[in-house]
Length: 98
Figure (cartoon, helix red, strand yellow):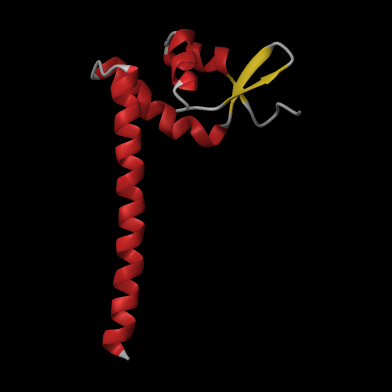
């Protein structure tokens, strides 16, 4: 697997000044995906935004991993409900204007 589009976990930890064990814990809870190539671990660039949110929750607000997991699930559910609401509003507008 090519690693040119992947971000090394060690580089992330250094950049954000976080512990490697924090990333491992997020991975164990299924909150981030880590890809292992040879002996190095990498994270996908698409996950950076979510990872930054989790870093803020943990280090700035002192929320534990279990809390971050709960918050992530709730935010995903809110996003799903917003998408569903938008779809239903579009349908309603079609019927009202038609």
